[in-house]
Length: 205
Length: 171
Figure 1 (tube, chains in turn red, purple):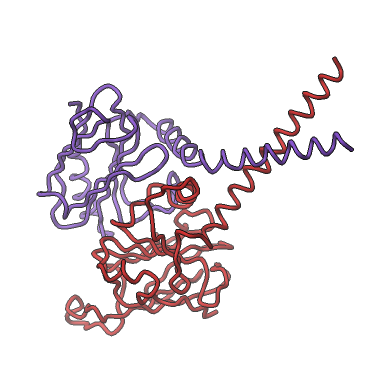
Figure 2 (cartoon, one colour):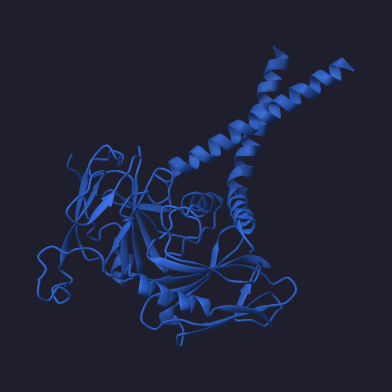
């Protein structure tokens, strides 16, 4: 009787320990996989999903974990940056600047997320910039809409402290994730996912 | 010594099993968690749309929300009968109808440019049912995205009226 109890206890212990090990390894493996995997490509600091068919269990698990209800790549291309130009993790401890041009897409936006993958609380309720809300450099003050050409440029600033324009508040986060969404991008984007011009994320402070 | 080796071997074997089970069923688990949270958060019924305005820092149901969108969402169940989604959407901005399986795969998406007009009229059912969209599972999630690029309250309210026109009826 005691022997059976002992065996049952050992079995129970093995299941609990195995469960903790297995689940932890799977989740941490998926988190690491978001840095280096077959279905992601890199464009500077930005990684991009090249295939959202989610045919393999690992692909499905990864997207469910970090981008639940994402759309197929035929509809949206998601570029995600968690590191700066030098490969260091994005963090609220530093300020960053991005200088970019208008991506070839019907709608595009930059959104900053905290380490919990949610929007970062801030007094001004600023979470994102898109083609209509971003302030362009060198725009014509009399005809601001007319000055927005394909060559128009903008500077985006990530910082804890308020900036003069295009400020994305970074709150208090050890890790940040910046997402660039391209809805209905041009064929050129699909053909050159790893080489279309995307802004470098430069640490300035 | 032999017992310790057996214990370690069993633990390694079970850990591998738990690892693959986690990878396999994590999407379904996350979806179920989301479903439970949403259903418990209010009077939410299956096959009925709920509107969500542009997400902000308090929106914590789905990771990486896009604050430029308003959403109409519904859990669908076509186990009894197929359903029909209808409504009038704007013709001046991006919107799309997307459908997901409980394992979170996006099995259908169609945007405003792919519709013949700004009217939505889609039937959804499972195999054997004569519908526009045929799902492999009888349950899942419908998410309609409506782009509101400006943060103007008047525009947001105006756009919300389009989402409010969306309905689900049984065929």
